[in-house]
Length: 290
Image 1 (tube, one colour):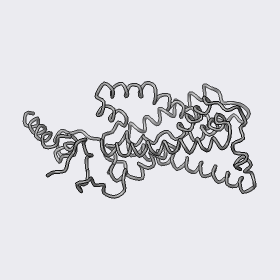
Image 2 (cartoon, rainbow, N blue to C red):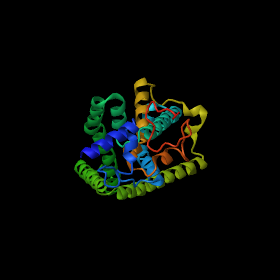
Image 3 (cartoon, rainbow, N blue to C red):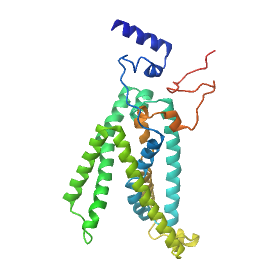
Image 4 (cartoon, rainbow, N blue to C red):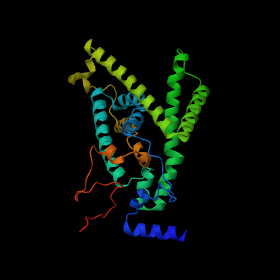
């Protein structure tokens, strides 16, 4: 044990950032290191991002955005603005993912930057409030779509919706706990299904436009308000649009399980100003060797 402790101390002295020691040869050859299996490739990583963004929100939020915006033109502007905000956030998280190559997403970044207490509070807020409510909304939406064809003339019973949503959550939890490979396969399959559904909706919309059904898309009619403008409702429309785009940061929760996170973040081999290729992320304050 003393020999192992001296070895770790020497490693930390040679690599002040600490992250270099995670991929030392001793880690995978009986050195006692524990690491997550790297089983998520580029295609599966893209599937995680697309699958989490294109969730139930894209099928639910458009109605709320249009109702709260008050006009078709303003609703389209809200979609564009929320999309730009989402793109900026995704680019920032891609940079964070290669700079701090740790799984955990927000928790890891808040902990490393602001300290353990802030990270602890962020983690428990997410576990107790944010993620349960988000998953509950997604599961209930899924169960509503599944049961609606069985009740064409009325709403599905609440007990049935809750039971199916609970079964769905338990099944997905079991899959994610049992195997990363199976979890990514399920993610890829559902992502393909959601893309197919969106493609059908887009095709039907284009067909309707081809038939001349574009009255509300004409500039003179697009900003015609069908309700009294209200700043509170417009803010709610932005919230609905942001919910539809939600999920762009989910890949950072499994950074350590990516086969090559730098390839996922940036095509090719990224280099710093010194011409070096980062393999474990640069720590703040890294300088070129003189």
